[in-house]
Length: 320
Image (cartoon, rainbow, N blue to C red; front, side, top):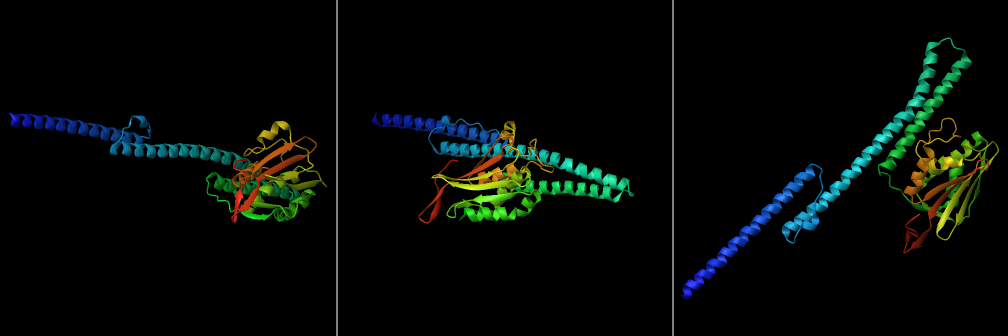
């Protein structure tokens, strides 16, 4: 009797074990099939997975890891689509911007070819027109190549601590020829002790664009004031011109790429101020503009103050 009871118990235990093993095996197969189906859906760029349905266990951990990978793939896919949209817009902008000066240059060339006996003065006028339009195309291409580097994230800012006064003096000195063309002068007010933590190469290009804009809109004999204000948390550099000013309705659009205001100079392609803002922001600074028609314009560039600690230069502010 006792032996039969033992045999019955063993049979029950064995049956329960087999049933449990079968159930576990079946659940594992179902989970594997679910994961296989999910991986197949990822290949079709469908990234939905209910992570809250997962339970404990090796397969669940695998499921969670697949989910994390899917999230990363989804984010990368969304970034790629956004990059493609930006590229399409950029190509459309480039095509539109290059078309105008190239058409003007082609018209001038057609006139020269159609009238070989043209008066010398008129011939020179057409040649100068072609030179101007081709110069615009060259400037546009260089500017767009620079912007493309920033848009693609390939630019790494090489920041260093420099004398603010020394940096601004270099910028003004390199702009002297342009100032002579417009018969304006720059006046610098900056303490000797002030320092900036910037990428000198790119920041020079940014300031040149702002100073060029100021020179173009200032009258003959006008002064462009470049000043620095050393605040507890920030360093502010202001560029003030004595020009005609900018209408209030145009100020919100001033830094938009390819935007040309009502008072834009001939040959202005509307990319300089956008490029300047891109550089400032990449270097941790911000830029704003204020203006009153007939009273000039003020560009203000604000840098978060840097402090030294343990031999390193640290940013006092995380947000501008």
